[in-house]
Image (cartoon, rainbow, N blue to C red; front, side, top):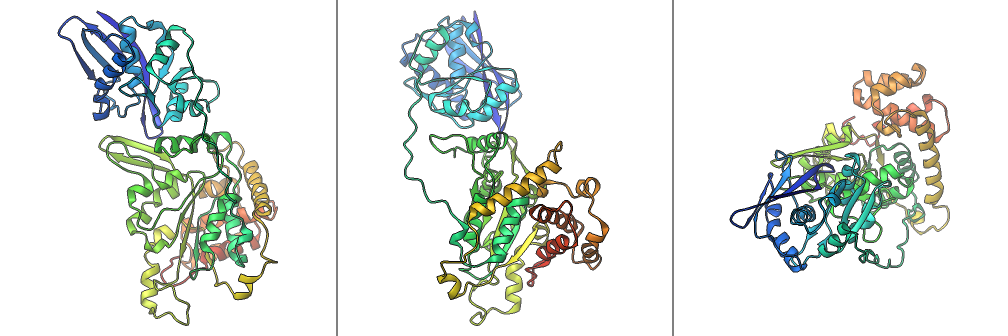
Length: 509
């Protein structure tokens, strides 16, 4: 009897666990059995591994072969275990030394001819291996750049099973990663100079970017709501390394990493169509749920254009991540947890016909029902409600006086975020929008003279307790933009105006 073991990683969302893969070659009727709660794709690995070994010039052991994946109680899914299964079997057969597999995690899918195919989730798998104490990983050549994003890990790439045998036996092989695709001509970056007029909308977008606040842009079609939202990601500072790794890990699991540049350094922007389902927004699917648009927008912007046209279940499903910054999705195969700290921007017309006021035939009741599709609990989590006016002919044709470019606004956003980060140093929060209201009132109190107007609005029922806390967060952002040490009455009044504006019928305070 011969026994050898290798190591792989099983992912559930962006969290993973190291899986020990054991191969046992025993006397008896030749056959191959895979045990340890494999799914269908992993159960099919027996045929892929056998064909890959034979077509790579190695002899298939004529023994009773058992491949065990431990812990046996945890479900394993996907084809990323192929490389570890093949390596453990070759080590048990004496083709490679078993000691070469110690301290090394193997990730990759095998084709029938022995080539190693890329898989999703390489970065979170490497993160899991590093946290478990493994300093060496083997990944497909196409995923090598992604695996090397994590410092302190010795990542090697293999293009075939033959390359893996060479690596484990100390023989040189061609480990040059394929050349990334040549990027085309850079697309022009959206700039606020492209937006005609809308000084109120511009200021609101700047405030959202500075504090990580959610906003509803309410106004007629063609007024620039979509253009303002599309330019917000370029007002945000580039992601730091930790945030970039978080975002890249989510996109790696989803299989949406850009070719040739695996590390995502710009805040992402997601704008799903209004026919999107709950699963496509918050994540879902059979087995283990995959990330949706809310998680793909992590550390960036989620924009819902024509928000009242989205299904009510889709909109209300966003309430959990808006509060907690994470999405926990339970399916038959297990519970996947994805980060979802994003800025939500919604745009809406005043009525379903979207005609100018002098031509609108919608009754007040129709308008109320249309905006009432945005539920009160959802709107209570929105910090700014901004009325966007119709663009005049003079504003549309003017080339001068269109306002500041994105670069100037982005500089103020960076400065405001730096002030907030300095204030919250030593805490888990970096922006005003992330700080729990209780902590904000307890650790960074605002003078009662400044909050009197907000307290009065709460007494009148215009603000909920959650709305009061969000008004304070917004006031802190306005103070940071104004370089004030603490919010004054003018900042709280300005924040309250954002909170209570857009007060058309159907919009709750």
